[in-house]
Length: 183
Image: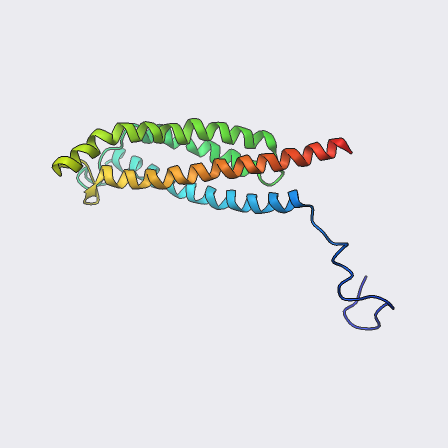
């Protein structure tokens, strides 16, 4: 063990550790990508909680439908987007490639696809609001289509970045696995 105080070995300098202590680049990349995926998972969870709260409040009539309107059709399958979130979270601690692949595929099915459908479902209502200024659904006094489009814009960005970082992470893990097999 080394000591911070006391005699120093002859010829030892403060800079002789730099060539010896290096972290392999794919481990550095893996750590930084995991951090980004965790942050995006947290934002995804917050978006999911907003959608789940709206669905729950409207179905159990906790407040009047004038305050929180009935959910759009796309919100129900979007609630299944918790599955890719869980798979992604399970894949990170042990670098589990299988869970990460399942997370990426299910993110397309349960996260991105409902958002695309929702954009098409709400377009006529948004068009009517834009052209005539008439809104029939409200969330706390704001037009429901406006609020949901704002949530969708954030959700699309979050899911796109999630898929991007998960793909980079998958490549990093796969390259590390291939390097181990070569040795």
